[in-house]
Length: 279
Image 1 (spheres, rainbow, N blue to C red):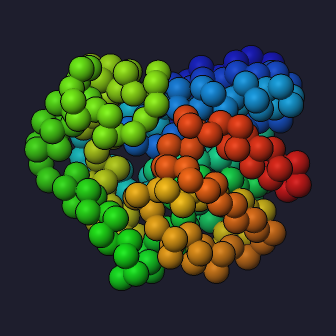
Image 2: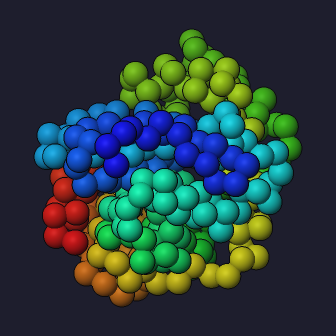
């Protein structure tokens, strides 16, 4: 492509995209998590551009204003994977190097597993392979994931998070994001109207579980986990190796919390570059 991609569509839904870096560079697709937007990668992408790569970061389903279906079932994992494949189609390339963090990591794992013909390599941050996540539930992951049950309640999570994200609230530091990411949460999630759709990723989980299991990944993969992540434990991180039947690297960022792209952009970029260079 010789033109920037500012948006793309999957059916009736249109997604906003941040396309940056050398226009003729190899494209790296970056999928964000909750409660973030494509700008979660702001500190990482310049490091990739310096190495000649082009970065494509979409605002995902529920976040992009023209891609906010209201039903929980419209956020099941299979449909989110279709959004990722539609983005690859819009780029006009056969394969991409795929990167994801948090929920974006889950989407990246599933896309790589279900469409290995469209993914050259996978780099996942924080979130393990979905099947490893499920298998780790009786090994401590269930306690770490208590908030997922809370987010499945109607109305109450929107009310609570609106208060938490409001500038100046005393509870905001508990979210853990550094500046400037923390101060823009209210505008990104609440003012923009993205919060209900973002929460629907959690509310769509029962429909995702009813879909077929996510198979093993057969493309070259790097999984990066941090031992200070309060949401995702060591058991699922270790089990993920069993879910990859391809060249695989497991990296641990010691002393880091969940917010790797925002707090550790150098480590994040280094892991991506090592994988895309060795895929």
